[in-house]
Structures are given as structure tokens and as C-alpha cells.
Length: 188
Image (cartoon, rainbow, N blue to C red):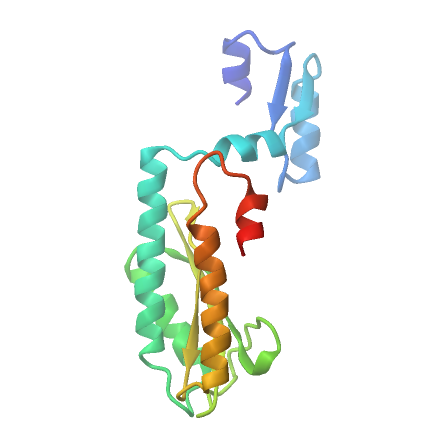
């Protein structure tokens, strides 16, 4: 990095760096090495620039999602009353590794307690729970969620789920470049 900055004649210029997750020791080394430059924390600016993805990045994001969803759905095929979540999680971990991805998370919202990663929880025949899982593939993250039911959901639960789904669909239909997030949120 320092060689590239020097080669471009920027050693005394203004330099923006993404400092998020950079340890203090490394920040100090950067400040010392660039003592003649004005160094600014441009974490938020760089995050905005990264929001626009190249075709190659979109391909990697799609592959991350494909791996995650395939392994997640396969793990749910193992879900039966009496099965511990650790069995599902282990299957997920093995499958994503076989497909070239790294583990990011695998969580459940059992018994209405919010998301948890308690692997020893044992599924019961009346469980209906939100699930959330994801992988890291070549530096790109996936994040997927769905509902898993060990029983036929009640009419009231189906009604609530439908209302939530309709809310999300109404927002998704509006999401495109140039539309403010507040417009999508308002539709929900």
C-alpha cells in the first residue's frame, strides 16, 4: 500500500482509508508511515462506493447465496422432532465446506426468544421458528432466512405470516436504483 501511494506521488497528499476493523496498532503504523499526508477515515464513503457491485461481484454474491441456500435447505431436510439443532448445523457446515464456502452463521428463533445459536436445543413436534443462516464465499457474504415448522401451522399463524410476507413483497417491488429506503419502508 505504501509503495503504491509513493509511486503515485501521494505521500504528502490527502488519503482516505477504511479504518473499520483495523487494529489500533496498524492505524498507528499507517499514521507514522504517512506522516506527511492528511489521512482521513473514509469508512462510510468507501462503504457507499462498495454498495455498487461489479458484474464479477454480483456473480460471487449469487454463488454465496446458492451455496448457503442449498446447504440450508438440505439441513432442514434432517429436521424432525427429537433432532438437536447441532445435527442441522453440522450438516450445514460440512456441505458449505464441500462447496468452497466458510461458515458465517446459523441461528434459530425458537420458542419466540429471538435469534439464538444454542446448538443443543432439541426440536419438538410443535416448533415453528424463524431461521437465519449465511456463508462467506471468496470474501462475499450471504444471509438467508426462512420459517421452519415441525407441525401444520394454525390458521392464525398462517394469517400473520401472510401479512408479513405481503409487507416484504410490497417493499421489494419498489426497490430499484434511485428509490429511497424510506419509500420501501413506508410501503411495508
